[in-house]
Amino acid sequence: MRAQLLTSVLLALGAHGIRILQSNDDGWAEQYIRVLHDKLNNAGHDVILSAPAENKSGTGSLDVGPSPRTSACEYDSCPAGSAATGNNATNLRLSWVNSFPVTSARFGVETFGPQLWDGQAPELVVSGPNVGSNLYLEVQFSGTVGIAVYATHDVGIPAIAFSGASDGRLAFDAPVETRSIVYAQLATQFTNAVIDSGVPYLPEDVFLNVNFPKVTEECTDPTKFKWVLSRINPGTFSEPDVKTCGITRLPTESSVVGADGCLISVSVGDSKDKTTAPAEKQAVILEKLRGLLSCME
Ligand SMILES: *[C@@H]1O[C@H](CO)[C@@H](O)[C@H](O)[C@H]1NC(C)=O
Ligand SMILES: *[C@@H]1O[C@H](CO)[C@@H](O)[C@H](O)[C@H]1NC(C)=O
Image: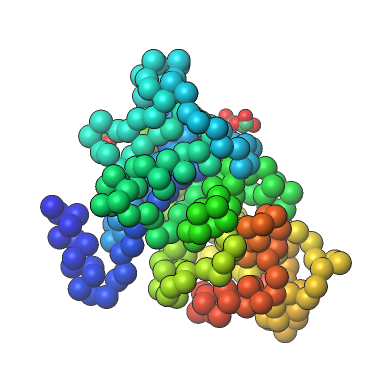
């Protein structure tokens, strides 16, 4: 009731709340995804989370029907001997699937979402923030990216993959760390910018791969971060990129995140092969996010 009231107030103010499905590869009870869940809800979105029962990092695009659990879910978040899928007993918006990241996202799209959204699918899939970066070659094996590629390529739902360089896993019920809050604030800001850019949120067969640098003393205030358009793989032998910052070659995401100055890489991914999307698709994102993006020094 209160959430509904809040949503209608935000809608009246012009904020655009949409149906968002969250997933990740670190597991449904990881702190990064739970803190983002709260932030997206507070921003007025209608959010459902469906993620693996435990850490399934590095499983790329694997998708296999879930099986019953023998042991407890990660951080004791479900009892041993549970069924193949389940949800939080008091909050149906939080679900787990005992299988791979893509399988959990598929259950969100096909089952959990429609159950709570009157038969409708999500309007956007948000994956992560992953515990640890997903740069260049890692992108091919990343479950976080696998989810975004499943959504955009297999079911035509726009998707963003977020990853944070500050790693070390944290439980949903452990004290909330600063890095969890900073990544959730940045991911919410970026998600809202994509939504505010209007439909279609992304060109066809495109996903966004966003990597946050480490949260340090100087990189804590969300307004200190800069967003830089990047490429996933080096472009030495590739066709020119979209022209921005005076040149037609985007920096690699590794060089952006590795630089000083709290820089966030934003790569336009090709959902057909998980490499960099062509210049004409980069151009669409550059135009949509012009107000957010900066040049590297
Ligand atoms: C999560 O799983 C991956 C793949 O099995 C493993 O490499 C990684 O160390 C695990 N992470 C943690 C923090 O347990
Ligand atoms: C289930 O949801 C309640 C209420 O939102 C929360 O306090 C609790 O930590 C959650 N437990 C798990 C395992 O998700």
